[in-house]
Image (cartoon, rainbow, N blue to C red; front, side, top):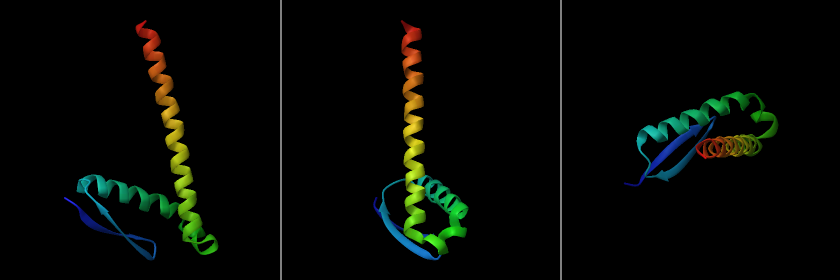
Length: 82
């Protein structure tokens, strides 16, 4: 079931629509809030857009690195089965 979620980040509010379970939404939003707090001291200097972009870039980079690690582990498992 679709529902609208309001998310407060710093002094701004964001809304989005989701069908994800509440537990997943809460975990995702809490993770974003925690990471944002790490950069909150530079929001005034660089602005929300740049801070959020930096967070997005860091997240995408981490995902790429993790995918590479998973692929390398899968390759090792495949080789070990041969």
